Amino acid sequence: MLSKGWKRSMNPRPLNTIFEIVVAAVEHRFGLNPGQLKRRRRNDHIAGPRQVAMYLLMKVTHQGYGYCAWKFKRDRGTCIHAEKQVQVRMETNLEFAKTIRELEEEIRR
Image 1 (cartoon, rainbow, N blue to C red):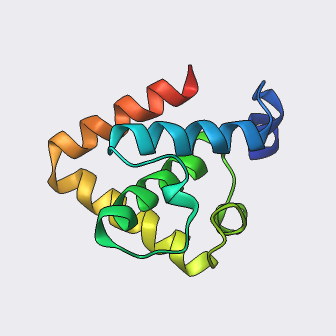
Image 2: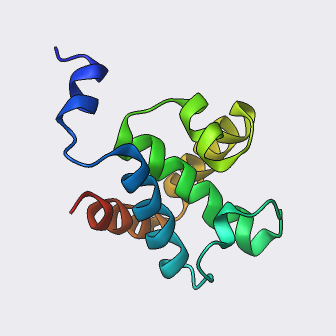
């Protein structure tokens, strides 16, 4: 079994680049202006896509809640909540799950 450290070291892109790719992809998919996900606002039309970006960042980078919180300038509890919300929504909404899979594939390319 391979350790998480191995997965991180095999990723050819720097983590900062992956973060920017995740944010740009999610902003584009949800019709947000560039930079909106990084702002402190909690509007519903921004909070949901930000949760998606947090979920995808952790999934693609294999980093934990601490890294996610640091990049989005939130606390770890926010990242934990985001992950749970996205997972529940994926289980109950097949179209949303498809969107998440498509975004993940786009980010990994």
